[in-house]
Image 1 (tube, rainbow, N blue to C red):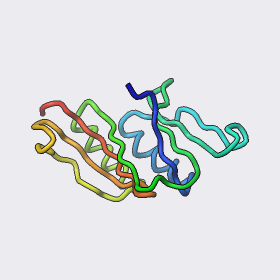
Image 2: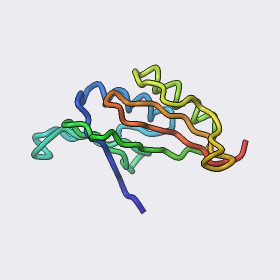
Image 3: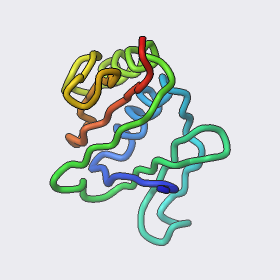
Length: 128
């Protein structure tokens, strides 16, 4: 079981704002934030549900190649809301909301590229 994960970002403020908006649509909040003076190396921000930051960004060199992170949500409407919010926050479309039956018949997802090109996804596995 994965407890938390994260990505390196080149423009911390821009990515922090992007993730606050995009992940806000799925119920995530900026849960924790620590400056380099506390971590000893770099600024970090943790997003998640209240009390459980499980996705972190840190100022630094973006992962190469960019990574893919998928967030499981409970409804197709939430997938749609994520996609809209991510695009409005400066994300680039990498796959509009819709079924991906090649994964399985009820796989409904949307894909966006964050400011550093990481493929960020919201997915619902429930039938319509």
